[in-house]
Amino acid sequence: MTEPSLRGSLWLHDADLRRYRPLTASTRADVLVVGAGMTGLLTAARLADNGLDVVVVDAGPVGGRNTALSTGNLYAPVSRMADLVARWGGDTATRVVQWRQQAVRSIESLVHRYDLRCGFQRVTMQYGVQERSRDATAAFERELQAYQRVGLSCDHRQSGLPFALGHAFQIPDQAQLDPAAFCQELAQHLVGRVRVHDWTQIVDIDAAAGIARTPDCSIRARHFVLATHSPAGFNLVQAEMEVYREYAVAVPVRDMPAPGVHWIADRQRSLRGVRGTDGRHWLVLVGETHRTGETPATDPAQRLIDDAQRNFRVEGEPMCWSAQQFRSADQLPYIGGSAHDNVWVATGYGPDGLTWAGVAARMIAEGIQGSSNEMDGVLSPMRFTPVRSAAGWLRTNATVARHMVGDRLAAASAGTAQTLAPGCGALLAVDGKRTAVYRDDAGTLHAMSPLCPHLKCVVQWNGHERTWDCPCHGSRFSATGQLLEGPAKQGLTPQTL
Ligand SMILES: Cc1cc2nc3c(=O)[nH]c(=O)nc-3n(C[C@H](O)[C@H](O)[C@H](O)COP(=O)(O)OP(=O)(O)OC[C@H]3O[C@@H](n4cnc5c(N)ncnc54)[C@H](O)[C@@H]3O)c2cc1C
Image 1 (cartoon, rainbow, N blue to C red):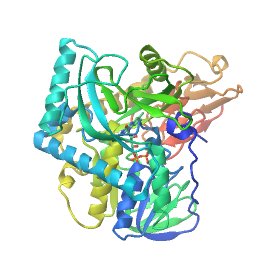
Image 2 (cartoon, rainbow, N blue to C red; image 1 turned 90 degrees about the vertical axis):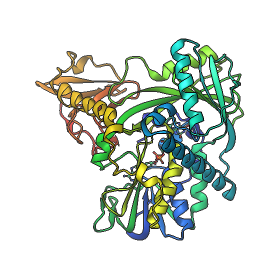
Image 3 (tube, protein in one colour; image 1 turned 180 degrees about the horizontal axis):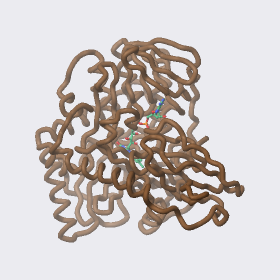
Image 4 (cartoon, rainbow, N blue to C red; image 1 turned 135 degrees about the vertical axis):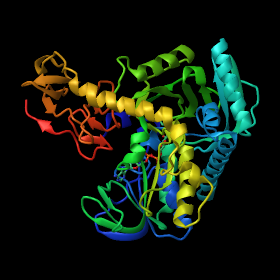
């Protein structure tokens, strides 16, 4: 089934997704890359350049998951530069920005090398705040200083929006693309050097034996790259991460913003213009987030649409979508070797993952070739940074504890299955037992255990997306209980009413 949140993406709505053959017979390779998003494909491209025999598999279509749900912005800074400098120091933050600059350049060189038709263009990134209040000005100045500290050239200008910013600066030479088209085009050009299989899910990896399994067959490999976006199965890394939903809308408008990345920090809004294949002008607006499993009553997508209507001349129906965001405890992603020598991970990207994917590709490809690089110590998933992680750890584990204990003790809603409206779900008391109940549009009731199979937290109804979301580690399930994304490995257990 198609997950509701994936249907709306601007990049997917008229994309002609090429099909690759699912893997049906057992095979061997030097490297198995699990996941054909930005991370998996960039890594596969590097590994193939190094002469390795590479298989890429994806549980869904190529590039169809988080990569296709992004805004398509590539930039050297990270979100919250000032925090990065404060936490890691100016020198490390400078190196981080340089690795990200190199990553954008390597993506650009792939675009030119294969002539990828994905709308790649170099653009300016604008950082601004709308308010001129003391707080907004102080936060702006702090961020500006951090950008300058890491060597980014900041030009005090503002441009290209139909409303004035209180303060703004621009950073040249960042980039934008259509992320779904990039993946589709890159995969096509890799075929012949890399074996690509879509709709092929890895259900188990036995690292010691060097075998990965799908439901139908197995793949023997010397190395396994988990380019799966989520930290599936890596409990240490998982326990450190905060999981958020992030929402996006694309709205047809008469007046597009100027080309470029526009980040309005005090409003938590990132926006860009896109000329659609049908010639229409689209405004892509993102920035509404909430912890997974803690869905607000007001629809986050509607808040974005309201913003668009306030500031642009909207003419037509919006598209809305959303995706998961994994944030590490110390603001840097987890990229590199794991506790198993032959298993490589790339996760915890936060909101900046398209460029981190390029960093991950380089780091993992070099690691597999046996060369260590300066990124290892900083980004390694095995790092332990008690001071830098402290706040993140506390926040994450307090949230998990609150939901594990609090939600289990909480009473079920006072309603009954009979009063549940079509399209709605709720935790109800059924025969004295708390039960997750959903009534579909045809009126049929579906009942399930409310316990997430991962660590038995109680799932919560997300009425905007019609999903059951686990507040502890972010597993998500369809309204009828099928697994949409892990770390859980199976769906909610059906119950009778
Ligand atoms: C609204 C929004 C806007 C964003 N905008 C930006 C932006 O402008 N710039 C930016 O840098 N970042 C942005 N991001 C973040 C960015 O989208 C992600 O960090 C990035 O796409 C991650 O790429 P990935 O390849 O690691 O993951 P994905 O693209 O999710 O790829 C992982 C793949 O692994 C597959 N997979 C998972 N498990 C298995 C399995 N067991 N077997 C087989 N396959 C499996 C999945 O099907 C998927 O295709 C945004 C995020 C959101 C939500």
